[in-house]
Length: 243
Image (cartoon, rainbow, N blue to C red; front, side, top):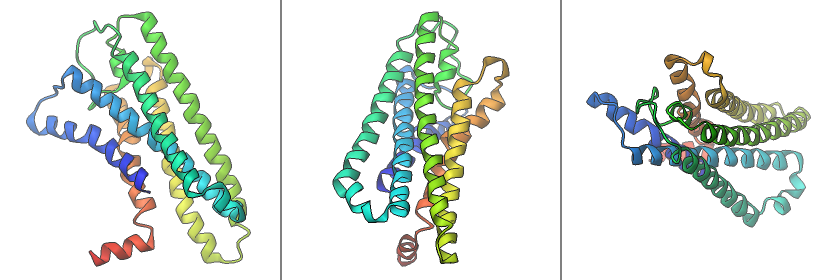
C-alpha cells in the first residue's frame, strides 16, 4: 500500500498541477525539458503502479488460494524484491520511451493537443519515419507486456472467485468480492483506455476523445486506488477518525 500510494501521488503530481497552473494563468506553455521530464516521470510512476497492482493481485491469489504456502512464497524478502523489480521496470520503461521519443526530430510545429505531454501527440510532430516506427514498436511491446499482466490478473481473479464461492461465511464472500471487484474494474479501465490512447488509429482521433481517454487512464485510477485500498481498510478508517 505504501508503494502504491507513492505511485498514485506521483502520477497525479506529474500531470495535474501543471494543467491546473496553465488553466488558471491562461497559458498552455511548457518547456522542452519540462515536457521530457513530465513524460519520463509519468511513464515511470504509471508503469511501476501497474507492476505493483499485478504483484498485489498475486498476493491475494496466494493468500486466498494457497494460504498454507503464503509465508514461504511471500515473505518479507520476496515482497521487497518484487517491489524493487516494479520500480526498476518502471524506470527502464520510462527511460527507453523518453530517450527514444525526445531524440526524434520534431518539425511539425510545437503544439500538443493534450493537457500534458503524451507520447502519441509528440509523435505527431515527428518528421522521422524510422524513428516513429521505432517508438511505435516500443509502445506495442509495452502494450503486450501490460496485456500479459492484465491476463494474469484476470486468471488469478477467476481462481480467487472460485475459492471465495466455497467460503462458508456469506460475510467473508461479501468482503472478498467488495474488495476484488472494484480493483478489477479500475485495472480494466486503466488497461483499456491506456491501450486505446496509445494504439488507436489516427483516423478516429479527435481533441475531445483524446482528452477523455487521457483523463480516464492517467487521473481516474490513481484517484480511485486510495478509496479501494485505504478507506475500505478498517484500521485506516479508525486512524482517520482518531486524527
